[in-house]
Amino acid sequence: MSDKIRKTSEDMSFSLSRWFRKLSTNAPSTFIVTVAGLAYAIFLFGGGLYTLINQPVASYYTESGGFLFLYPDISYQFGADTVVAATLYVMGFIGMLFIYQSAKNANKPRQAYMLMVAGVAFLLLSYIFLEGAISFKLSG
Image 1: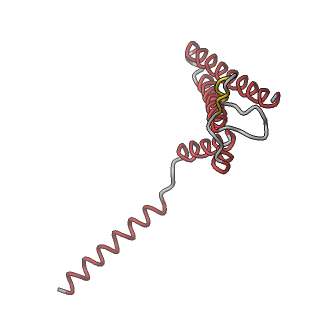
Image 2 (image 1 turned 90 degrees about the vertical axis):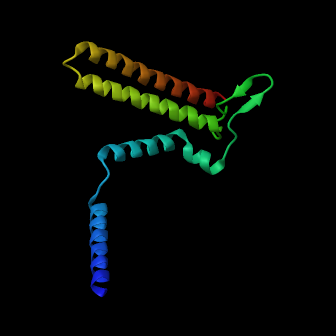
Image 3 (image 1 turned 45 degrees about the horizontal axis):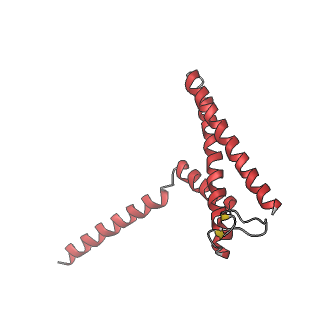
């Protein structure tokens, strides 16, 4: 009986050591690390940390002007400010990805041209709307 117990404990320790070795030598793919880093950067640039710490209201309703999604001062922000900024940053990054993919597809000129136009459009729209949001906040 003791031989049987010893054998199962040896098998168990072998399987645990094999599992631990597999887990410790396994590394996440570069794609996962890149996407996680990019998501973290967009979260920070969009104002996510400010929103988590201060917990501002989502938006504000004025009787004369309707809903305000962007706070009209640079020193404070609504929750919607974070969503707007993060969305615009993602749109700009997608534009950069399209431009990169168009350079990779140089052997297919029509597809490369369409990707380039879409990428430049996304990048310009993102930039224009971000600048508009900043000028709205600065004008108060």
